Image 1 (cartoon, rainbow, N blue to C red):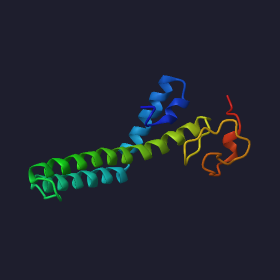
Image 2 (tube, rainbow, N blue to C red; image 1 turned 90 degrees about the horizontal axis):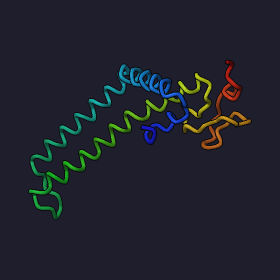
Image 3 (cartoon, helix red, strand yellow; image 1 turned 45 degrees about the horizontal axis):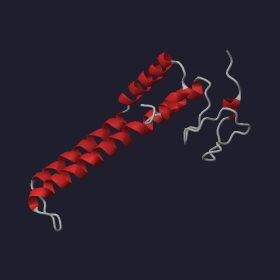
Length: 138
Protein backbone atom coordinates (compact mmCIF):
# COMPACT_ATOMS: atom_id res chain seq x y z
CA UNK A 1 0.00 0.00 0.00
CA UNK A 2 2.86 2.40 0.73
CA UNK A 3 4.01 2.24 -2.92
CA UNK A 4 0.61 3.49 -4.03
CA UNK A 5 0.28 5.95 -1.14
CA UNK A 6 3.76 6.91 0.10
CA UNK A 7 2.17 9.54 2.37
CA UNK A 8 1.26 6.71 4.74
CA UNK A 9 4.95 6.18 5.55
CA UNK A 10 5.01 9.58 7.30
CA UNK A 11 2.69 8.25 10.03
CA UNK A 12 4.67 6.18 12.51
CA UNK A 13 1.75 4.84 14.56
CA UNK A 14 0.07 1.91 12.78
CA UNK A 15 -3.24 2.50 14.57
CA UNK A 16 -3.33 6.16 13.52
CA UNK A 17 -2.36 5.16 9.97
CA UNK A 18 -5.29 2.74 9.83
CA UNK A 19 -7.70 5.37 11.20
CA UNK A 20 -6.66 7.95 8.60
CA UNK A 21 -6.90 5.41 5.79
CA UNK A 22 -10.37 4.29 6.93
CA UNK A 23 -11.51 7.91 7.16
CA UNK A 24 -10.26 8.71 3.65
CA UNK A 25 -11.91 5.59 2.23
CA UNK A 26 -15.22 6.66 3.76
CA UNK A 27 -14.88 10.18 2.38
CA UNK A 28 -14.13 8.84 -1.08
CA UNK A 29 -16.97 6.31 -0.98
CA UNK A 30 -19.50 9.09 -0.34
CA UNK A 31 -18.25 11.38 -3.10
CA UNK A 32 -20.62 11.07 -6.06
CA UNK A 33 -18.05 12.30 -8.58
CA UNK A 34 -15.95 9.17 -8.14
CA UNK A 35 -18.99 6.89 -8.25
CA UNK A 36 -19.89 8.45 -11.61
CA UNK A 37 -16.32 7.94 -12.87
CA UNK A 38 -16.38 4.27 -11.82
CA UNK A 39 -19.70 3.75 -13.59
CA UNK A 40 -18.43 5.42 -16.77
CA UNK A 41 -15.32 3.27 -16.75
CA UNK A 42 -17.37 0.10 -16.28
CA UNK A 43 -19.69 1.13 -19.13
CA UNK A 44 -16.70 1.66 -21.43
CA UNK A 45 -15.33 -1.77 -20.51
CA UNK A 46 -18.70 -3.43 -21.19
CA UNK A 47 -18.95 -1.78 -24.61
CA UNK A 48 -15.36 -2.74 -25.44
CA UNK A 49 -15.99 -6.34 -24.34
CA UNK A 50 -19.08 -6.55 -26.56
CA UNK A 51 -17.05 -5.23 -29.47
CA UNK A 52 -14.23 -7.67 -28.68
CA UNK A 53 -16.66 -10.60 -28.57
CA UNK A 54 -17.74 -9.78 -32.11
CA UNK A 55 -14.15 -10.36 -33.19
CA UNK A 56 -13.37 -7.01 -34.74
CA UNK A 57 -10.68 -7.44 -37.37
CA UNK A 58 -7.30 -5.95 -36.53
CA UNK A 59 -4.81 -5.33 -39.30
CA UNK A 60 -2.79 -8.45 -39.91
CA UNK A 61 -4.20 -10.34 -36.89
CA UNK A 62 -6.33 -13.43 -37.40
CA UNK A 63 -9.92 -12.87 -36.27
CA UNK A 64 -9.73 -15.61 -33.63
CA UNK A 65 -6.97 -13.66 -31.79
CA UNK A 66 -8.36 -10.14 -32.17
CA UNK A 67 -10.94 -10.59 -29.38
CA UNK A 68 -8.22 -11.69 -26.95
CA UNK A 69 -5.96 -8.80 -27.89
CA UNK A 70 -8.76 -6.24 -27.52
CA UNK A 71 -9.85 -7.88 -24.25
CA UNK A 72 -6.31 -7.70 -22.87
CA UNK A 73 -5.96 -4.05 -23.82
CA UNK A 74 -9.35 -3.19 -22.33
CA UNK A 75 -8.51 -5.09 -19.12
CA UNK A 76 -5.22 -3.25 -18.77
CA UNK A 77 -6.84 0.12 -19.36
CA UNK A 78 -9.57 -0.77 -16.86
CA UNK A 79 -7.04 -1.57 -14.12
CA UNK A 80 -5.12 1.61 -14.92
CA UNK A 81 -8.32 3.69 -14.90
CA UNK A 82 -9.50 2.29 -11.57
CA UNK A 83 -6.09 3.04 -10.09
CA UNK A 84 -6.19 6.64 -11.30
CA UNK A 85 -9.76 7.23 -10.15
CA UNK A 86 -9.03 5.74 -6.71
CA UNK A 87 -5.53 7.04 -6.06
CA UNK A 88 -5.81 10.80 -6.72
CA UNK A 89 -8.62 11.57 -4.24
CA UNK A 90 -7.11 9.21 -1.69
CA UNK A 91 -3.79 11.08 -1.89
CA UNK A 92 -5.52 14.44 -1.48
CA UNK A 93 -7.43 13.24 1.57
CA UNK A 94 -4.29 11.75 3.15
CA UNK A 95 -2.35 14.96 2.54
CA UNK A 96 -5.09 17.06 4.13
CA UNK A 97 -5.20 14.77 7.17
CA UNK A 98 -1.41 14.86 7.54
CA UNK A 99 -1.44 18.67 7.44
CA UNK A 100 -4.22 18.73 10.06
CA UNK A 101 -2.14 16.48 12.31
CA UNK A 102 0.94 18.69 12.12
CA UNK A 103 2.91 16.81 9.46
CA UNK A 104 3.51 19.41 6.73
CA UNK A 105 3.23 17.91 3.27
CA UNK A 106 2.78 19.56 -0.13
CA UNK A 107 -0.81 19.22 -1.31
CA UNK A 108 0.24 19.15 -4.96
CA UNK A 109 3.17 16.71 -5.07
CA UNK A 110 3.27 15.10 -1.60
CA UNK A 111 6.75 16.35 -0.68
CA UNK A 112 7.54 16.23 3.05
CA UNK A 113 7.92 19.89 4.03
CA UNK A 114 9.40 19.38 7.49
CA UNK A 115 12.55 21.46 7.88
CA UNK A 116 11.63 23.99 5.20
CA UNK A 117 12.33 27.64 5.94
CA UNK A 118 10.25 29.36 3.29
CA UNK A 119 6.63 28.55 2.43
CA UNK A 120 7.32 27.13 -1.03
CA UNK A 121 7.66 23.47 -1.93
CA UNK A 122 11.21 22.79 -3.17
CA UNK A 123 9.94 19.91 -5.32
CA UNK A 124 7.15 21.55 -7.35
CA UNK A 125 7.32 25.24 -6.35
CA UNK A 126 3.79 25.41 -4.94
CA UNK A 127 3.21 28.03 -2.25
CA UNK A 128 1.65 26.83 1.00
CA UNK A 129 0.49 28.25 4.31
CA UNK A 130 3.51 29.27 6.41
CA UNK A 131 1.68 28.07 9.55
CA UNK A 132 2.39 24.50 8.42
CA UNK A 133 6.08 25.11 9.15
CA UNK A 134 5.51 25.92 12.82
CA UNK A 135 5.78 23.07 15.30
CA UNK A 136 2.41 21.62 16.33
CA UNK A 137 1.26 22.44 19.84
CA UNK A 138 1.30 19.43 22.15
